[in-house]
Length: 286
Image 1: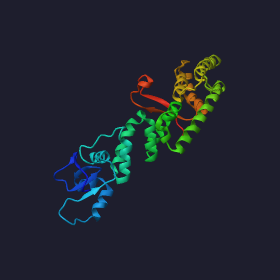
Image 2 (image 1 turned 120 degrees about the vertical axis):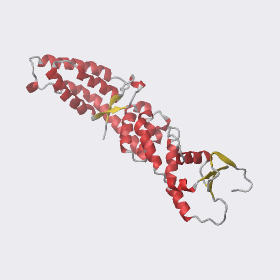
Image 3 (image 1 turned 90 degrees about the horizontal axis):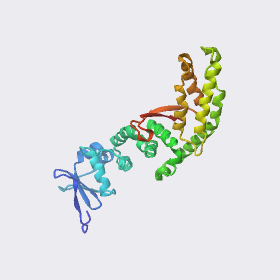
Image 4 (image 1 turned 180 degrees about the vertical axis):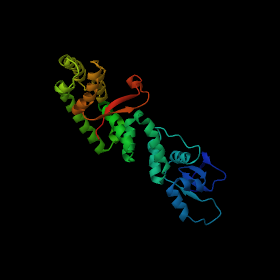
């Protein structure tokens, strides 16, 4: 410790039976080598090569701020700090530096449950740490809100590759909106499978409903992909008779996919943005 500098003991992590001093800025943390070594590969290796040359408690000065070191230690000591959005990225930076394998695992568990709350942050973290499923789901949400997302400050923190991928997928989606007019000519009730004498009337009813949907969809700025999918998939609710309804169900998703691309349903839990609906369909560009 510098002789002329004033220090204070940590109010959170200063244990009388501790056997090592960690110093960050002007704060002293008296902690236990065993806990540090068990939690961190870096600390474990550091203690293996260290030699005790006197009876004094060994001390290590670290480059972290006092608040960062307190955060790190709060994760090592029970009860562990609960992961939240405010600390998640800083905690991962510390985990990378000190090689603490449990932190990325806990962050992954956190994001699996709550990625939809902050999809851009989730996408950034998932890409950096190779959380493939979280990346995929977060990407779907960011793409769905791309016109709003590009104005969020941390959007520029996404990698160049991910931003380019988002732009390409959005362009494909816009092209797909133009192709939705093809739904008029697509087969919903094939002649050979029609089970009553009202095939023409049924196809006319389908086309009228499609036209109604397209009037809502072909607007500027373009609606979110999830809103378009919800409108189109509402065609499932058409009542044309049991057999024809079954046939429409078999062909509808396939025809929508031809225009817009693959989509899948995500269960996001209660979501006030969508009137409390727990799940919704999103474009999926795998």
